[in-house]
Image (cartoon, rainbow, N blue to C red; front, side, top):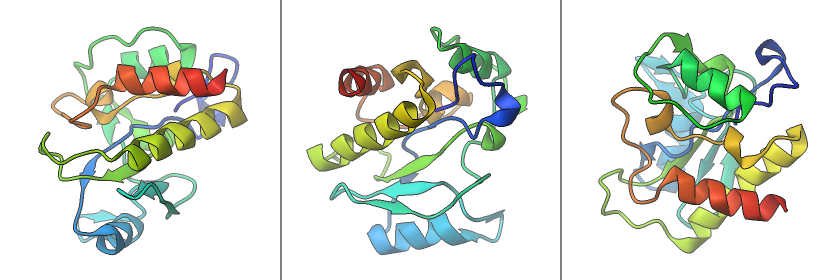
Amino acid sequence: MTGSARTPPEQRAGGWPGARPVTSGTAATVRICRDGYPELPGPLCHGVIGKDGRIHLVGYGRTNHAGLGDDDVLRAVVAERRLPPDNEANTDGNRHFYGFECENLGDGKDPWPDAQLEAVEKAAAAVCRHHGWTSRSVIGHKEWQPGKVDPPGFTMESMRTRIHDRLK
């Protein structure tokens, strides 16, 4: 989640680009997300959400998870307004967004267990509540970066609705 218009972007840790397809078993996924790999050093996110709903905290501060994305999307998230199409990759999202990776094959067929979706909802709501943000500050990779398709298997709008309801 990136923040609200009340907090300037340079003072925010920011967004939740949601669920990136990562899986090799939870322990291996956590290790990869914590340590990275030769082409991209870790940590690759702030937390990994396993299929069992457990959240593994693996990073803090800037992490290598969001990559380049659309500055128009960033402005919309900060202002907590409807997202425009992501048609550019001109802004480093890693300095603006919190990132939680979710264990999933990313093929649109691998299931999202209820425990995992509830953990996504709870983690995002906790970050929003802490910063005084609404569910509009929650985005997925596919809303940030052109060409990204994750998370497949659920819509970010449905997740934002769940987060909105939890924040009431």
